[in-house]
Amino acid sequence: MTSTVSWKDGMAFNGELGGFDVPLDADEKFGGVGYGPAPKGLMLTALVGCTGMDVIAILTKMKIAPTKFTVDAEATLTSEHPKVFDQIRVIYRFEGEDLNEAKLQRAVQLSQEKYCGVSAMLRPIAQLSRSIYVNGSLLCVKDDPPPVVRPGAA
Image 1 (tube, rainbow, N blue to C red):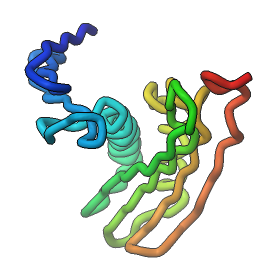
Image 2: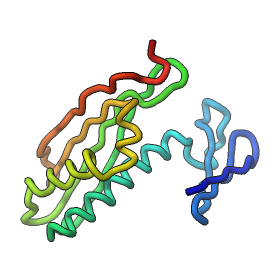
Image 3: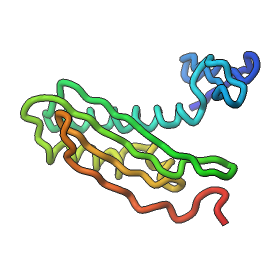
Image 4: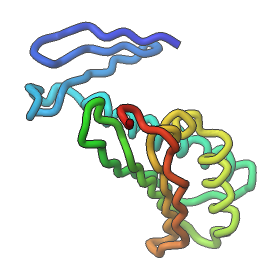
């Protein structure tokens, strides 16, 4: 896997990954002009994309077919440089009829604990938690233990 960025102007870059264009820019408070998302935000998108794909693949094998499925992520950053994620909450939202809740939980668990490489890369620096909603109702919440060492920690 390779990726390249080329400086455009100000804090904006054109990224290329596997033949796809990826615009990047800093947040406005750091000189960005809204050309594209900031890199840390793309990390969250990578996380929810990775786990979402895992969950759908697992549910397909289980013959579970939600009519709608979304994955959100909310994160906080450390206050000191390098500012890294210290807490990430992943929210899974399933909609559909006759969804087997135990299988939904199992699919999410397998993604988070076995298959999602992005989760595995983030887990050493951030405490991950997950919530599962089915048809708008909270099914469960799980908090991983906090990481042992964070970048920049004494």
